Length: 303
Ligand code: MG
Image (tube, rainbow, N blue to C red):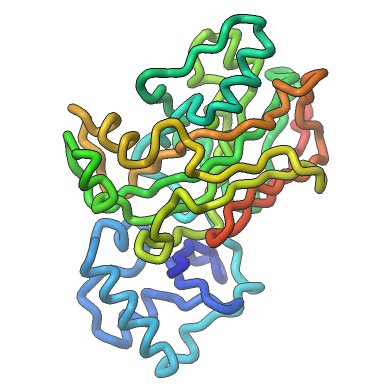
C-alpha cells in the first residue's frame, strides 16, 4: 500500500494512493463505521495492525464509495508525516563509497565507523515531496543533496533487538538530507547545517513494510537537472536497518511515527572535483524504486 498525506480543498487528509487516484481514508472509514482513526498518518501509524487491517477493508470495498476517491492531480502531496512529533533521526556515513569520497577531500586515511553515527534534523526542515528548497546565499555557498531511504517506525520500543527490529517498522519513504556543507563544518556539529527550513523533503508516500519485503533490494538514485549523480542499492549500507534500529533504540525509546533516514551513497556535490554546490533554479530528483520520487527546485532567498 502507498499511503500519502495530501491537501484537498484546504483540508489535510490521509489517503491511499492507487492508479492515479487517492482514496480519502477518513471518508472511507466513516462509511465502513471503522473504529480505527484513519484521519491522519500519525493516527494510522499509532493504530498499528488494527489500522492496517482497516486500511485493507477500506481499499477492498472502495467501489462502494466512489465519491471518496480523489483525482491525484487535484491534490497537493505533503510529506507523509508533515509535522513529525520530534526531530528526524539520521545516520551519517553509512555507505563505503560515500565515506571514501568524503575522506578523499581531506587527504586523510579512510576510517569506517564502528557504530552508526547518529544526528537529527529539526522538524521544521521537513518539506513536501515537490517543495521548493531555500538557498540563502547569506548562510551557505555549498548547499548539497543526499538521497536516502527513510524508515518510519510503527511499534515503539526501547532496547529493540536486531532480530525483531523489522516488527517495529511501519514502512519506508524517500528522504533528501539537503545539507549546507559550510555550516556543517563551521559549527563543528552537523545539526545546524542539516536543519535549515525546507531541507528535509519526504515522500511522496509511505509504502508499508509487508509490500517492500527486503528493503536491501531497493535502489536509490538522484539527478540534478537530469544528470545522474547518485545510484546505489540499500543493501550497500554498512549498518543495515535492524542494526540501526537496535543501536538507536538502546536506552532510547523509539515512538510510533519516528523517522530514521539511513544515510546517503556516493555522488554528493562537495566530493566532486571541483566541488559543486546546488544553484538557484536547479531541479533535484531523488528516487527509490517501488516508493516514488521527490522533485525539489532550489529557490534563491533574497537578502
Ligand atoms: Mg545524510
